[in-house]
Length: 312
Image (cartoon, rainbow, N blue to C red):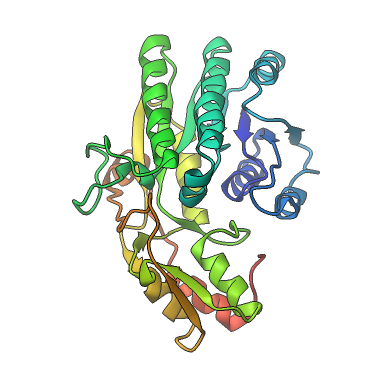
């Protein structure tokens, strides 16, 4: 298959590209290589697969509607996986327009490209953030998500609504995947585990918001990629799935996994943050045959045992 992967230099996009190439697909990756975090990390991820004979890479921004239009006219993609997005709940408080422009306008350009070139299936990233102020646990794909707490969450809900409309108006198969706190090798430096590792290796205190009381459902990168691949093998029409482990830990517990002796700095919770996430992946198990295998405790033990950051 010829597959377009947007955000291909990102944490998940790069890992997905490698998996698709390994199974024999032709992959065209695009990424704008922005400086939300050090672009050198994106270049390092990309170096793992940019020279593969079945991989091509274009530096472009999905906000550029004309460039996206030309991309779809020049290539006939059998499938598209949209992972390009402005990430981060806290950053969305400081720069809300970045989320509107990339996550909503940019996603609209991808939908239009798929619509006009008869793409077989669009798989796209949503987020557990869409549940906002919901308190019922575990979250359910059937829960109301009308109360997002951040622009990031609102933009992801908008993506789901936009894709749903395109599916029904233009018969475009779409699948949205609500990711729950993804961790693993080559991860983003603004995520908990990488931030803790950086603090430890630089002899700085761990920073814990809300005194470390937030509860998060952590999902390993290989499991997320597996869910993306399994989704791409179907052509559901306006479908949604949760991809989460179904177990949550407080941020304090995660910090303790590294050792209780490292200094910590406790900071109050910020606006836009949600207290708890917990997935119910039963629908993904039933319809995709997806079941998470990664274990955050074993992952951190491996980090400590190997005395390695596994790429910061």
